[in-house]
Image (cartoon, rainbow over all chains, first blue to last red; front, side, top):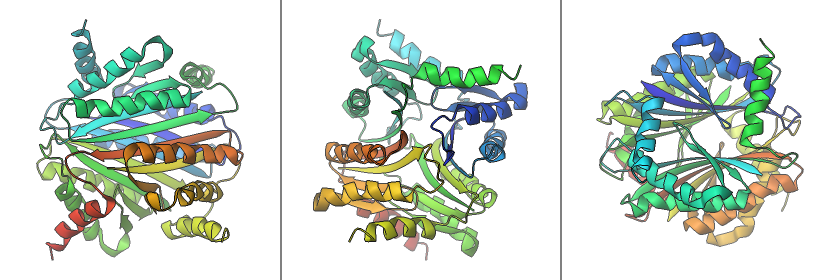
Length: 104
Length: 104
Length: 104
Length: 104
């Protein structure tokens, strides 16, 4: 089980806004459907699942801006891959927030 | 106005769990108080504000694992700095989700 | 043609030194042989080639620390993928250094 | 002593080429002079020095594309900060290449 953070940025589009490209990339995830858990943040998309399955989706996401006219794309991927226990997005958030609540 | 994504990882701690370090880093943000808007995600912390103010907080966050015993820290910072309009976390999310809802 | 920057960090190894893991990862590249151009820097490995071929090598590199005992691995990948011209490591370096030399 | 990897990308410039911006950023380093050790790679600039001094230079580098007309800049910074020993770019490269040569 891996958690993967992805940011996809088209270069040289002539507009400082990239939200149309980000929306197109998100549609790839929506089509991947129920099988792949994901969360949109203001800086990236975070995806959880079997690493090879997630990377296959990320590969399709990276292709999307080209299909929408971009000629250069910069994609940053961070993989958090844990094999000693089942690390999920929910478990990671809970581990931190539990510790923060112990402060109160 | 800038949005900054930060991930702080201690190396060589002898444990695969880093949530105690992440919680300590989050406390720096809690102490920064109302003045700085932030969001915890499963892979990073996202902070919004005037760039120099945000970077000063990130600098203190980076120091936290050392104060808790780490001897090597890897910190990754992504700055999204937009000067043509007031780019906020909320505005970025809305720009994408509006476009996705137009699909329905 | 894409240029891909990779940093692979094992977590929880109990040592602040990661050079043995980095060397193991580099051996994967050495075995990939002549077909794939790459460069080691103090912070990452940079690889040039057809994107799918490069990503297949990166996938094997990511597996290496687990084979050497790590239980958690953080891998960061940055893809610079340009479709309007053949962007190579050499061409990118030359484009910048030519501009810098014009200053003299 | 820290080693810092920086990538600065202007968005919405209307051109897929960013080498003019990269050259402008490199000039900031050249002006910082002898006091700060740095290396240009095809994907980033790597800087070595006291962390606060390096971050002050990176802050000026980040401002450069705005001075050259960009309205949105994405900057990625990776800090490798080691306090148990003097980690330099040269020492990190040697630690890996020594291990690779032992294979022969």
